[in-house]
Image (cartoon, rainbow, N blue to C red; front, side, top):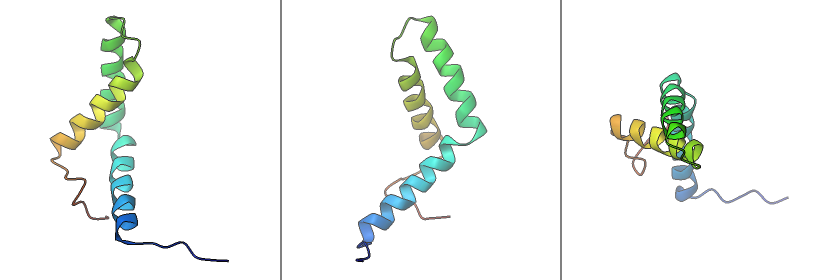
Length: 74
């Protein structure tokens, strides 16, 4: 059995995924996503769930000024 190669890019991707996961599981994210989705649905936007998720994630990353390319694992 061969072990997978874990280069620096792999480690960076793991750090980014960790940060995004923490954001997406936060109460603040879930509340904002739900609020945005409700607003978008009122305007008959078929893509409301996806847009709400994207906008909530973008908002929290921008709010916290998280540089996903330079983030370090917790």
